[in-house]
Amino acid sequence: MKVKLIAVDMDGTFLNDRKQYDKQRFLEQYAALKAQGIKFVVASGNQYYQLVSFFPEIRHEIAFVAENGALIYDNDIQLWHAELTHQQYLSVLKALAEFPEINYVACGLKSAYAHANVPQAFRDVMQRHYHRLAYCEDLTQVDDIILKFALSLPDADIPELVQRLHHALDGIVKPVTSGFGFVDLIIPGAHKAGGIQRLLARWNISAQECVAVGDSANDIEMLSFVGYPFAMENAVSDVKAVARYQTSSNNDDGVLRIIDKILHQEPPFQTER
Image (tube, rainbow, N blue to C red; front, side, top):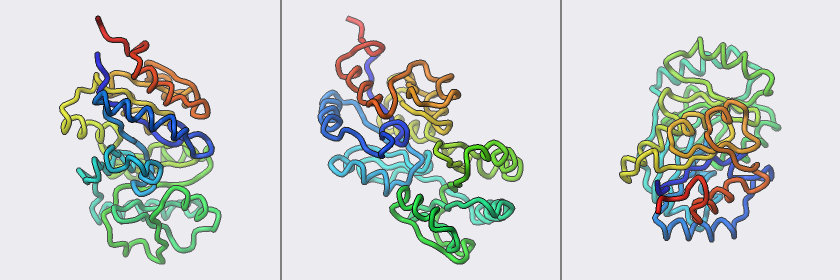
């Protein structure tokens, strides 16, 4: 079956540990993908404004499933966004107040927002992930459409937090780990697979004609959805369990190797003759 779309996660997948990629090689690959009519989709938990900064040459002609699926763009057109009601937003803030040791951002359509008293170390980390980030004395007064929350905490503390938050916020948001000490609180159904599904309906492409690549728990729905799911060599075990295929690590151009296989119709992408 001919591949018509490839969707890639960013951190730990498309980007190496230095937050870089082989731009010259990829842009040559992208030109070949485009010539063959294959769509390229960035599917990430990161903010849209941060994601487009990695692709200045082609940002106007590719698609973005940002904020873990809560915000979808195609060709600079915003197609859809999820939204917490104001009461749901306040409920999440109340639940998070029970964890004063955890720093977090509320991810909005216009910007992300953090409390003004967060430590400088947290600010430094968040500035690398959020190109639009405001600091507020009172987060209850934020005037924006809130898409999700992103929490930062030590990896060892994540399982207990996820369990406690899932109980407290069941039906409002769902905790998912996104790697590198982050937990996202996403609106149920507003995940990467849901975002890709909306793009497929727009383009009349089937899930079986899609490739997806990821490394963290927030990629599981996406990998379970497509016909060609790939786990990075550096992926967590749960991702490897659902992915049918595996590629080399993010520091060894794992995604670019997959693209080469697609372009040259190498296994598992060979077409019947």
